[in-house]
Image 1 (spheres, rainbow, N blue to C red):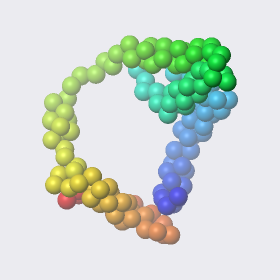
Image 2: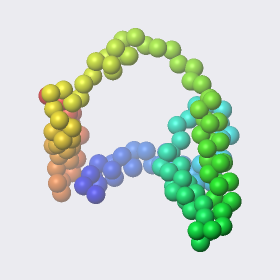
Image 3: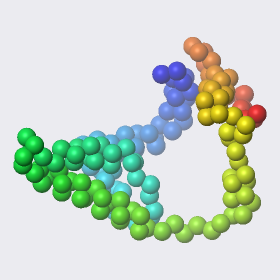
Image 4: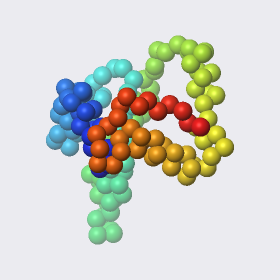
Length: 144
């Protein structure tokens, strides 16, 4: 992948965190699921994992005739997980100045989506040119 130098530095900086995350992903994310449901704080689940289970549960019929109840039960469990997570509340207060700032942001301003993504790609090249080391001293914040 193109941003390998940046990724390498990022991995070094957050090595402990990445190691913990990696540990959660072993054994079909069993530790991740357990942690997610055990914690009482709000959480945003990895939706990609749910997508995987939805795809697997689409195989509800075996040979087009027999209902695969295991797949149906698996899907029911995942839907219940999402419902449980949705019931958890965030105890946040609204910060008006930040809210106003975010609402006024318009990254696509006078640009098509394609032009905007092209600009982002160009800015990523400023941070890390092809084949070269990252240039983190160049801070790219202007989206004109």
